[in-house]
Amino acid sequence: MKGNPLFETRAFSLEIGKCESQEEYEQLVQEHQKLYTGWSDKIRPLMIDKGLTAAQVAQGCEVSESTAASFVRKIPAKRENVIMLALMLGLDLPQTNHLLTRWAKFQELYAKNPEDAIWIYLLRKGSTQTPAQDFQRYFDRYQELYQAYCDEQAPKDKDDTMKTHFALHQLLTVQDDQEFMQQMQALIPSFEQGYQQLIDYVDQVMEGLGENLNTLFENNPSCRSRYYTQWRNLRKKRKLPSREYLVALGLHLQLSSDQINHLLHLAGMGPLCPKDRLEGAIVFYLEELYCQFPSMFYPLSQLEVMDYEGQQETEKGPSVSEHILLGEDWLPKEDFAEYVRRRLEETNISLGDSKMVERFLQLL
Figure 1: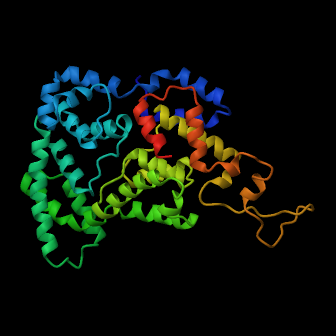
Figure 2: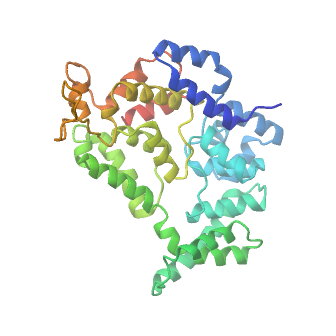
């Protein structure tokens, strides 16, 4: 019987957590080499089976033929190109989300985002060879509805949770274009607030650490500029940051693997994938670090001081880090993200797409 891919991923993640050394982790990777198939291994058979040529993909996605030809070799730089490719391949919504999150490392389609809502509707309608044109036609109509909404007084019940949930459900079951646009119009207030949870979570962590983007990257202006751009786009344009940005930001914010997974979940993305070489390595280094120095992770916990008689003292003792870091040379000189970056650079495991890895390391 064919194995359950989700179970295999979870089981492999547990195995990574059991590794006690770099050597054990490398051995585990070698033993599970088949789990590390990449984008090209996934997309090439689909394109051959569908008979898609570079010229057809170029016309359908409205990109150059050379760019279209590169899609079979490497992950498209833009998320919408992955979605358009899925439409041309005739994939359904679950298959497209799997392609986005597992293979392309983008967030899944999120119904509370207007552009994603259009993509979801197009996927439900079925395969098309003109995805770029189809999307633009619906998006232009949505822009007209949005402008009309902005020109009017915002309704008092725009925060009605039940109404929003009902509209989202209806959005996934509409049968024609007119009904679809009616639901899109009903969801405009929700779209305006769709990413607030993600923003609030990061703000909460920043506040807990006593940091902001200025102080967090005060010694790295170029890195700070990258984060400002992505975060400004989220706040002002409701445009989701890239997956690599969110994972790297989680490392800068001293989050555990579970907390990074929560961050990804709020963005509509799948958890860190142990089958991915880069993300699997990150999971291993975070688990290893947490076992040795849990106080380095957000939030900083407090260790209650015990006297020699085993009696608990009434006053709050020093932080765990003050105990654990005593006598350690490397931790005070190396912050959280720098540690993970160094470990990634030192590893002798091939991390797959070198450009993707290089781009990620630049965020650290």
